[in-house]
View 1 (cartoon, rainbow, N blue to C red):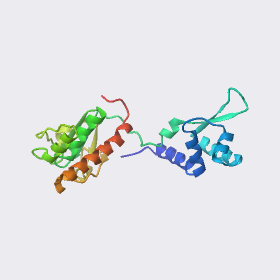
View 2: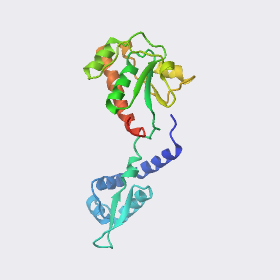
View 3: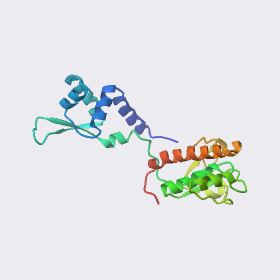
View 4: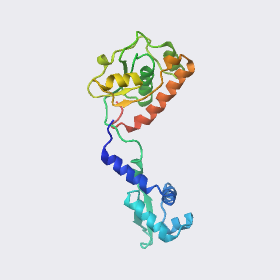
Length: 228
């Protein structure tokens, strides 16, 4: 996956500004309310000239701004800029009509991922396999049921029959990722989720479910656009 260079440079600049403990303490102090430089110096027990230096660095990075008091126009207040702090999150991905999760047999990981995505994001999802099995693995069906999700035991499909233009393709196993990397369609993301079928235990299927759920929770806010 490509990340825009300008986004990386911007985020690196913000991280650099926060790399000093005193500057991070100033940002923490301003998270819930505004304060004057003098109040910051008093609360953090820092010399005023040092606070002035740190405030300049944070302001140059776009992390805070200065406003004049409406009461005493000589007094300055500092306020955080949440829009700049938001840039420290994961990079945004272009909007996708649908997310397609792919694994080798389309019998466990990709099925669970698609069900989780639909349930947690209310966006369209599908799953497919590079070499689909004849059925969904019973333990995948069981772990889905334990978490309130439904999998169609006979609903496996080949990736060539599922993927359309505009889909975001996520390979959820190493084999599928490596199979598809040299051809088309190419996965935009790769999640190296261990194969629970190989272990064959309920604990392995629970671990795969938990891994996929965490990845989906981290990915969903990075997609542009509104859920369908």
